[in-house]
Length: 149
Ligand SMILES: CC(C)(COP(=O)(O)OP(=O)(O)OC[C@H]1O[C@@H](n2cnc3c(N)ncnc32)[C@H](O)[C@@H]1OP(=O)(O)O)[C@@H](O)C(=O)NCCC(=O)NCCS
Image 1: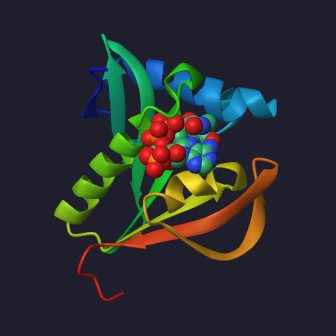
Image 2: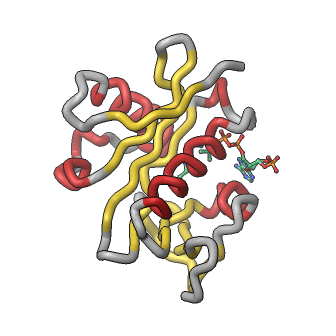
């Protein structure tokens, strides 16, 4: 399958390629566009990309929230690559980076339709359903290994 996961610098010219992936997988199916959003928060995020033969096929962003916590966001894998373990590889890279950098907790807003994806990687569903980008979501979180919190 030969998929590699790496960290991409926000100033990379490939930012546009990641933008297109997010637009296609996270906004277009909802009739929305990133063009109408302020993406300033991207500037503080670490970008993880999955590549196959030079093309970006998946991404996830890690946003520091406080000294203990990061948020996993903008998780997307192109349809033709779904259910091949690419999403899991990206989440694992983000987790490794977060724990190595001393963060204790990863939080995220999971779309209801993909709760099973995060549950399969031991994320806990927290609290009540809420609406974001017009669709049902749940808060989820995972603590660092050996963390008591
Ligand atoms: C959700 C998404 C990121 C999953 O990526 P992926 O590469 O297909 O996921 P993987 O193949 O790594 O799957 C990992 C595990 O999650 C499970 N899983 C994947 N998609 C799932 C889904 N939609 N519902 C339930 N479980 C799912 C898989 O069965 C797999 O478990 P297994 O290894 O025990 O069989 C991808 O389908 C996607 O981009 N969807 C559209 C955008 C989106 O909804 N993003 C998430 C926003 S919160």
